[in-house]
Image (cartoon, rainbow, N blue to C red):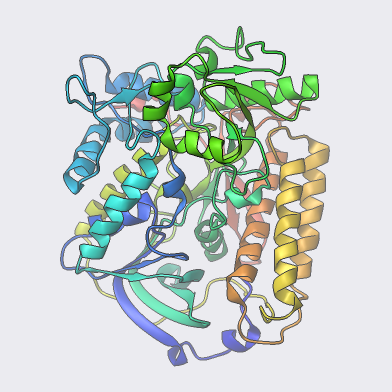
Length: 558
């Protein structure tokens, strides 16, 4: 991490410090749910790099997938759909648990006051169907503003909780470890380092969509928790699997506005520039095939025709229904001068979700004692090589509740003896050219990853990416120190470079195409590669890859 040497040399006892039972990093659905799930009587600090209520969750449109009616659906069918989307790399035990606990998660959210949309005729929760689902099991709120509604409700609950202290504009710099156990974290707030000791640290810091120039993720999605966990010695997995959503609004927005596949669930059709249906004959589910299938078809059609975008045609859907169901999408399209009720929407793929992250068990525990992970920062095994639509919000709620139950039996003592994780580097004064360098370096990372580690990959391109990221890594070590005030910009660049190297390295090793990983030089799946790749930082600072076997499907207990 980029910490000024002067600060690193300081006695930790001289820093602003605090103690808390549970430190949670991140304020999206996973972090907020985890804060509310901590057992009564425990003190909680919720640290967020932006303001409370601002996270990647706000951008989630489609909804939450859950089995609510066993007459028209079943847990077994949700499991089967998730496993099929995951392309052979899901942990079936984790998938069975996720699907089985989905109904309870929705009940808990309703009890919190989440205003899910309801069917006007029967008053039941309205449900839609999205890509990869065999049934209409996706509940939603505000038409296409599910994430915003969850963020609103859970943020209000956290603010009302006397047990939770919120620390806004607070950046995770590094985890603090002693004898292999995480005992707190080093945070950056108000221009200085702050040491927070904790019995348990929960990483709910989201994904790393900002690795790519074209992404639906907000600027804060820089993988800070995942990178800190890797530096501390935690095991990561599945980092090569990045989900590119096939239908982001084509244009220059950053982030790119997402055009939810729920729109295809309501009848919209992907077409090429000649008006021909893109998914016809590609997959039995047509426009509602799993996201990796649709993204590959879109990318292939764009490459074959030289088009910079395709069309999502929703003009056959009644205008009134579009207005009610997709008010957010329509507003964003209209702001770009597009009227979806009368003309097709220009769309192209964009990085959307990181299937990989910090490996956890079914209760959110990582390989490091004292450290938990939840949400997109975690790798629970439920997504495999390709996440099933609308399983992400569900995962955050379900696993946060499980972390709360796991903490119930553990004592609240805080260890006051700490040590720093990893071998920090340096950064300069944000008011000098160093800050401008960080901005330029970030763009270089994003462009390199998009061009060489994007939808279509090859050994040649991945090798070029590795070389370019290594050069950036070396540059990070030579930035002049002129002030002990690095600011978050330098921290974020360091995290992006580190995670970009992790993604590229595992993508280069995996010589096949599967799920969100598509190699033009190895275009088919290979049975011997039906294993999960792990990554760990050695004591010497090198990245060491390993393999995880896939449990047999027979072990699933829905």
